[in-house]
Image (cartoon, rainbow over all chains, first blue to last red):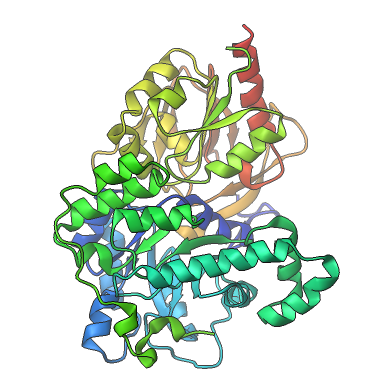
Length: 299
Length: 199
């Protein structure tokens, strides 16, 4: 098999393809093997292994880095769904470690402290695919140009306040729709204004969609939040602190999974929302002073 | 059943890509998440995705039993990747408590090639189709580890591992033709739908 000339690993199609298979699903943040099992049992399509959920990173402060390899390995052993892990923005060596550890996806994430305030990771150099955050279309296209195989709208992680997630998914998809209305000779300036490569801009103007899967993240805490993101056009949902900072994580996780699949069925969302116990307390994004907003990391 | 639509199971996964392939054949396509939607269709594609999630949701929302009955009654079904796992009578390395719909007399090993780093693309000879070979995309893909008497092999890798099988109206592949431009497996499924519809 490996001697067949056409055999290839780490191709664009294979990298973007795994994200295609996660569509319509929920990816959950977990900090240990027990949480990973709960997530898998609840119907997560993948888990994101990290040391502290964003709500704790926010409250405890300090530098947030990639997770302890033993912790990630423990999670890989505990579940058979894909395991993702986060590297700091620009920290290509953390990413190399995660690739050596054989994680399924690397999240170059603003939730961790950036390691480079100028450059993101050159993601074409890796066999493992990357997901990156974005607050608008230009940022998404710059990440895709660097090799990202999946985009998630950033929202504001660790808040339980969905308003920034709403803002970012609306912004990205609104800018996609706007491109499709432009004349071909207007796309050059559109690329300049988006600060994005012309080829990607022209592609989106003709297809009407991003060339990679677009999930949403950052503040989703309830089944209704998840369904709203899906109705707004997200391909799937990341839930961070929203599950394991709530009163009954297993039940809430399963409810968010149901609401994501039946996002357009209010009766299912209503039924899923009953008896979940306390949601995460959360923090209003408007109460967070600008320098402490994670979505501003990355550019 | 003439004129009835073709379904794509839409609990999770790349169901829109399958729908687009079937629409390119001129099929009327509906997404299936509920028993009443299943009751309308004359064929069903089970897409790629996470098989353990499809299993849970199909049981939770009362779709698993109607699906099993439809398969037993001869509904043409094509499963890719997770869909192949759902159609297998036996699953190896499923998550705790994972069930399949069954129908194909095979045992399938989940994530048989390893993690994402080992996902790959390769040309595969499919004798039924002749030339050219099929360009097959494997993503954390399963493999058919045991083929029972009732199932027949349509394709295998050079090392002998079975990646496409057929049994009556059921068709399954480890890989994802919907991610390429080669729709011969979908065509084979759709021809079966048309033949069954007008039988």
